[in-house]
Image 1 (spheres, rainbow, N blue to C red):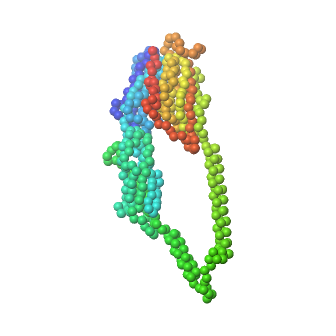
Image 2: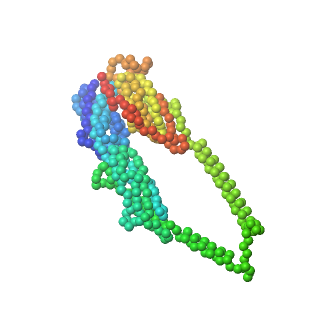
Image 3: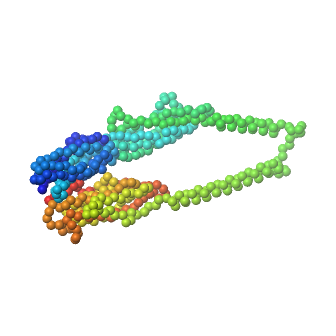
Length: 455
C-alpha cells in the first residue's frame, strides 16, 4: 500500500495577525478504500485556535481528495519574520506503516507596533519633578524610535527635558526613559495648578504614524495655605511675647536675671529636665524601631524563595503504554536555567522524538540514533513547559533495527530525557539577573523538522 500527499500555501508574505489557508491533497495509490489520519506538525500546531489533530480523510483507490487547513498567524513579537516551515503527517488507517509527510514553507512578514505609557500618571512639586516613560516594542522586528516631550498648553511655566530622544528596540524589548520637569515661574502662595505634558513617539513603521501618552504635573505654591496660616500665627505669638517681655509688670522695673549670677530659674530647670527626658525617650523609640525593622527583614529573608538545583526530573515516553508526550512545568515564582538534557531512546528507525522548551524546538532526532541537544535556551519563565514528544509509526517492513533494545517490539518506542539545571527565584533577595545569550553558540541547533519515515 502506498500514499502520496502534497501540501501547498500561498506564496505571498503573510503578516502576523492575518490568516491563510493551506491546501493538502492526498492520493490513494492502493487498491482498497482507505482513510488517512492527518496530524499538523511544526509551530502552527502550537498557535492559538489551531489543532494538531486534523481528523481523518477517506480516499477511494486511484483517486485523491483535498482538504483546506485554516491557519491564523499570532500577532506576537515571538514570531520572527522570514521563512517558517511546517508539515502534515498522513498515516494510513488500514496500514499504519504507510506514512507520508509533505512540507510547506510560509513567508512571515514584519509588523511594527509600540506601547508607550508613563510610569506615574501624576507628578508634582513647587520647583519641578521627575518621571519615567515606559516603551515596549510589541512588534516582531527592530524599530528605531524618536521621542518628543512638551507641555500641551503654550503658556505653561514649565521646561521639560528627556534623558534620551532616540533609541532602537529589538522585538519584545522594553526601555525606561527618564525625564525631568522644571518650573520656570514658581508661585509663592496660592492654589495648585495642573499642567498636562504630552509624549509623542515616532518609529520606523511609518512617517505618519506615532504613539502618544500624557501625564500631569501639579505645580504647588512655595507656601501652602496651611503653612502660611501657621507662619502668621507664630509671628503674632512672637510679637506678643516680645511686647510682654519689654513692658513693665506691676509698676516695677524688670531686672535681667542671668544664669551666671544666680543659676537657672525653677521654670527653666523643669523645661531642661523635660527636654532631656523627651530626647532620651526618642532615642529609645528609634533604637526599638531599628531593632523591629531588622527582625522583620530577617524574617522576610528567611521565608524568601531560594535557588535550588533541578534534581531527579526526567521526561519519559512509551508508545506501548500509549504515553507519547511528557511535560515538565517551571514552578511559580521561579525561572529555569536549563544546563543539559541527556536523551536516551530505543525503537525502530521510523520513530522520531522531539524535545521542546516553551515554543522553541531544542532537538528532533530519530529514536534509533538519539542525540542530545548541543545548546540550551537562556532561561524559561514560570509556567513555561519542557515537553518530550514521541512519534513512533510502525516500520515499513524488514528486520528490526540492530540499534533497538533486546525484547523491544518493532512498533514500540521508548524515550527519556534527564534534565539538569537550576531553579532561580524571580523576586526576593535570592533573585539573580538573567544572563543574555553570549553569541551564536547559545542558539540551539535543532535537527531538521521532519525526516523520511519510509524507506
